[in-house]
Image (cartoon, rainbow, N blue to C red; front, side, top):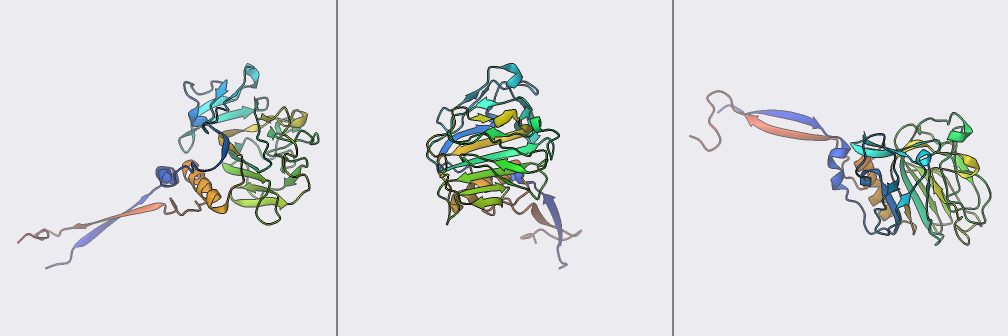
Length: 282
């Protein structure tokens, strides 16, 4: 009997087609979660008056001034929607007070570096006793500046283009070892160190804002998803959230949990030669 011939078909699979393999980690201590997909009833280019909180804590953010509302667009990053911030848009936000907090943002800057200072902001989450410095993603020199929950501003020069979709993470509080502050782009640490500020000190500022920094610097970027955590994550928890966001938004880094890392699926089946009986036939 002759040998069977096998046909092999290799199918490319993108991470968004299998992001459900990396489920959303529900056990983390979320303060608020804002997902552009959760904004419903809008058409492309419509402004966002209300952005729901998906954490269950009812911290929906709103903006009543039309000129200060971000615009909503569907099917932008791996089929998901985004909020487009365009140099004047911002939303008042309530911030936690525990001093052990994290900010996670899926974001793509419009320009890197920012073309002018007015378009070189990001958000304002300084302590009430903090200075009048501004956070930037990025600034006109291409640097990221950050003071989330901190009385001191830190900076670093990212090694990757911020005009690509990135995961931006800031962690502050009682972190691993002596580290009390950490900034990451994707999973790479850009800055880490300790400081006597001790997180939010007494309380966050009374004018916490997403989309606008101090000194009238505004975010010029698209944002698909962001959250604040009211507790610092363990490595296991970070791996879980990293993997979920990497797969869901097809980000540049591979999932930590190993899900969706194989981008190909191999299908094989035998082809009978002419006159060859099927298995079991005589």
